Length: 193
Image (cartoon, rainbow, N blue to C red):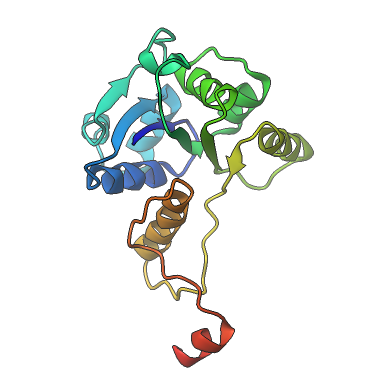
């Protein structure tokens, strides 16, 4: 499997980093990473990770300004792309096909080739323009998956919340992270309390 991971300049870069950490443990997945300048800035603000160490988690790293990269062409076969986190600027570019960066161009290619595109917007609150863009992205074929924490799995730490979210995002590509406590119905949930 060949998967593109785009990280754009929204808060929540830990989701992209954790996704890369987990994907690195799956030998049959080849990751192609694009880190926007905004994401690089947020990696420095929100984490202790050096950008080079984040990039080292991927099999292939592409410059966000290289619109001639392999992943900018539909003839380069991939199994899809996830943009995690996805800024509203990047979302806007994807929806309007304004491909002035490789993150947006690669996402546009994934959509036009009818491959799976998962967008993980990390913005709140949302105004009507944001909601319209999210709706249009879904109409274009993207899966919109905001990183909203789930609590039926009784998380005890921030890592539990992040890992469960990453597990659910990986489910969208039929990859089992081992992180997800599967819902077994209200009766079983009550028994397990």
